[in-house]
Amino acid sequence: TAQPLVLGIETSCDETGVGIVRGTRLLANEVASSMEEHVRFGGVIPEIAARAHLEAFTPTLRRALDTAGVQLSDVDAIAVTAGPGLAGALMVGLSAAKGLAMAANKPLYGINHLVAHVAVGLLSDGDRDAAVAALPPDTGALLVSGGHTEILRVGSLTDDVQLLGSTIDDAAGEAYDKTARLLGLGYPGGPAIDAAAAQGDGSAFRFPRGLTMPKFEGSAENPGKHRHNWSFSGLKTAVARAVEQFQDQGLPVPVADIAASFQEAVVDVLTSKAVRACREHGITTLLLGGGVAANRRLRQVLAERCEAAGIELIVPPIPLCTDNGAMVAALGAQLVAAGAAPSSLAVPADSSQP
Ligand code: KG4
Ligand code: ZN
Image (cartoon, rainbow, N blue to C red):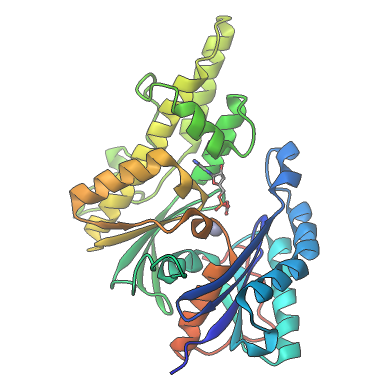
């Protein structure tokens, strides 16, 4: 049987993404980012992001169709991120998708952005095999970006996804961005801290690992409420205090050492909790996704700890780890193949979709 040809649309944050897949084959993945417009504010401004989607959407769609060499009338379904994300940004993609679905008489699939981050591991293109041929039963996913920090257990992409743990305050990328601001390194902070940390000593400061005390973690047999959860707000405060101490004494702030020590704390707690959640839930394959997956130290330590725990680690190419339309199309194709019912054309934007 022919593999479904699916158009995927992603507008949950600052990336306008349109991707086209046939089954698990990637045909096009066009992304326009409004990040440059947010830089001077030090964070994504929702209304600016929504207006940028409105301007970028049609040209991005045009490029994706041209790259894939298909027409809208050829596609079997249209998939679009319905949540979670910025409400106004989601509404632009959803409105566009609904209009296309109605005009071309195609089924519409409202997609959960986080599950799409996992489905992208199935995609292969001309030069590259898929990260996984099929998702092994009980695949884990560690999703780390500016908006989310989550560990998932995925029994089935289409109907069995369980949240094992998440941040209770800042996302990991948000912690990078806020810490970079404290250190005067600019926005977005992830790449800046990654670079500064390479020149510093990660053991110069011992910054806190959030939610690792026994009262939060409990034991494997008797898990505490926050065994698999993260918290990064205490870390940010500890960095602020360290910076202040140098400033108060009129001493130069050791930016590289603080950046490296901050990164060491983030990477340590992300990887140790993710690997332990996998072990305790019988997960033997872990996929890494989100913008923070670009972090060199995170990739290195996660690879070491997965290997030591006998867990196979999958890291898709970085353009597929960050927000894009192909991941939405990939999950849409899985839903079509599984015979899942399409969404109503009245499907709402669900900014806090779990
Ligand atoms: O997935 P993404 O592009 O957008 C969403 O937030 O959904 O992730 C962006 C986040 C930002 O917080 C950025 O600082 C972080 O990913 N980031 C990094 C690195 N590159 C991007 N964090 C750590 N190290 C990096 N090399
Ligand atoms: Zn994302």
